Image 1 (cartoon, rainbow, N blue to C red):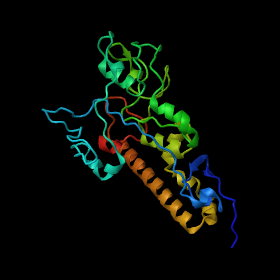
Image 2: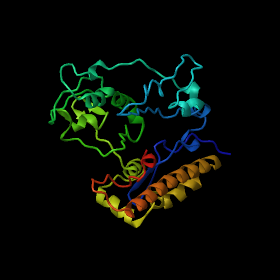
Image 3: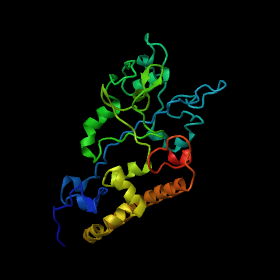
Image 4: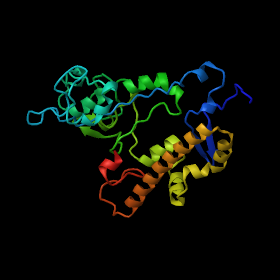
Length: 290
């Protein structure tokens, strides 16, 4: 048996027909006889913020469906948080926080927009419907600047509703304040993406122009099929455990592709509504989209 310190680069990709597909961390990427091989591989740091613009039912007819009624490690989960109970040891519920910067402070109406713009920035946003926006760099982008260099994409900004970055949406405030919570600088809001297909292709596809994406959709080609030749060559170089891991990973990607394609077929068979249709691949059902 030959033991070598040579290993696949951790940033190994499959490339074929313009597709660039990142692979998960494999045993073959960890050099033998090294400290990394003797200890569990450190997972990539992940951090997510989920914003509910209309809030939660914290006082519905006198009943709080969100905040636990008791405190301490054995607190009782509320109705909304109940599905998270199996992960009790991995979470904390924090209450009693308040963003004073989201108050009017003399700017009049516009609480909804101010709340969105202040949530991750902590800044009192500038009241304007023009391009002279001002808020603050958001917490997610502070984290992305530090840890984003370890991932292929520093951050993802996702939403359920289509993005709007111009015009006025709430009593003298630009729509940009109310349609994103991410700011890379005090004057730069980051647009969100609401299309599952475009997000999938951003993560696993070539990120080509919209015209190319439409052409690919019509051909019904799988992103994974495009890289099939290189995939076959890679599988031959992997050990049994890595082959299983890659197979499971690719199966999960194919399932995501299948669900997106199914949603697009359903959309194509339905009459177009009068309002502007969101981007490619938005499912008809709201819960499917979420």
